[in-house]
Image (cartoon, rainbow, N blue to C red; front, side):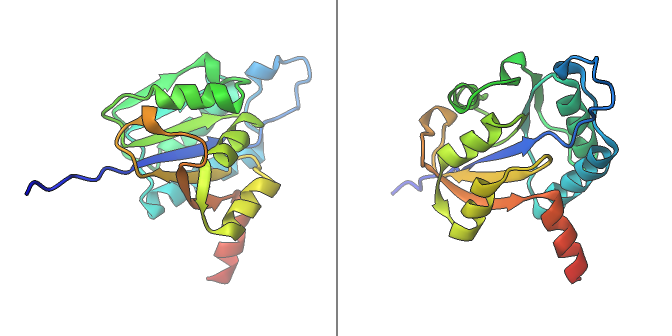
Length: 184
């Protein structure tokens, strides 16, 4: 009797960190991170590292604030196999983001998608079918900047993921990290 190898895919959905509105003449695409974003992004990267959330492929919007978020988060993680900048992520809705996720390289088991709201939150809510109800409600009520949703799929191929097919493993925000830090 042959053993069947069970592969679980993990999707990390990260909204970019807080962006600056100090230069109103800048195009939205070119807005950099605000000081609060420069503080939150590396903390989320450290959280990911400590939790064992290690992407082997990263899909990132090429907007300045998402690239800067990636730079700060990635300092805490091992180098991924692939990093793709994809303009289709910028202003994408959840169905477009799902299509991009489903096209992830077959060798990818842990995928990080860094993008924008409302698409990131809508995608997380669309995919999460199981998981802690309180965690799901936190994610549903607000998906703030630098928030991270962690979804697990019990399938072996990204093309097989569908709405409500994921287990919501974790939802972390910079504010929740502050609460945790205060408890220790």
